[in-house]
Image (cartoon, rainbow, N blue to C red; front, side):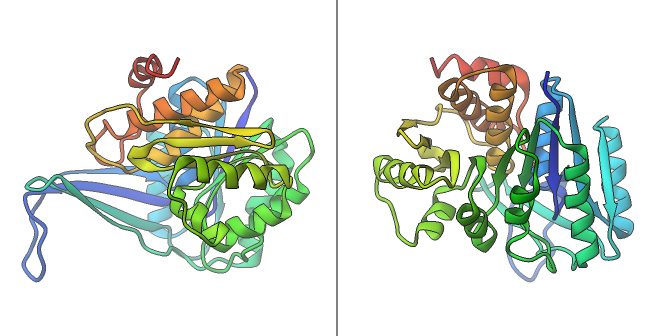
Length: 306
């Protein structure tokens, strides 16, 4: 099975808990606290490891929180490579409000990194020369907008690059081109295109135009409970989300990416890999907090995407 490397330049320790009500000023008593290693690439690696894919997670990490992230990754038995930084790894918080069923997510901007630190992560990816590289998540402060574009330009042709990011980092990477798969949310895709889309067909037409320009071989645009669109230079396809009980939306996009990569690694064609991504994204919302998707749920939901 081909080897996969994930890159997380702005990882996080994801903490999750529940509260009866969330309100200002007074103390909010929480229950069921849990901590998971997080950040886009690390989440993708956690899911792929559950499916038995040979995987290594590369990431920037520092401070006492960086040591905790290392410990959490070791508890997950995940092969890892940490590029040390001087600043502290960030910690995020997701609070599920029992009374309303709503989830509140607090995500800090993250550490300030030096050129040598973020370049160290890029250099590790180049030296590893994996079959698949999944670069996912936001850029930390100090990393320039063109970081992912530089990575794409320097990778050997044999490495397929999957990118999941947003904002100027996504724009720069799309303009540079050469990506195998890119996965923005609808909001991120609209920001990239500079306009809104009312229907999945409109999303698909815009994504097809981008793919035809050479931005990426495949563009998957996720639209939350409405489903997702997959496009290449020849056209696009839409799939609705499976009807499931939503317990937490945290990590659904990362699970989608992991599902698609898993499909491609298995040798699936793009439509079948897309179905695996849909099943994985839907399975993720069944899990509370930051638990991500589980293989048994993915396989069960995959039957809904013939």
